[in-house]
Image (cartoon, rainbow, N blue to C red; front, top):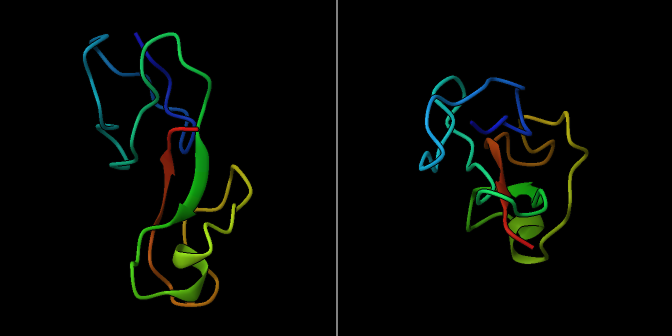
Length: 71
């Protein structure tokens, strides 16, 4: 079982790649948590890979959701 680093929900399978509750990307089993970045490819903060705090769910510049990506 994995725990979502974005919302804290628990997945039901080790193979899960996305959170059932918020849709965030889940870390690979046994991997370190990734970094929380903007999902909008047109946003300047996505292009610079600006890392948001763990509890941020949206980009404060463009309003797009944030998601975790692997390190």
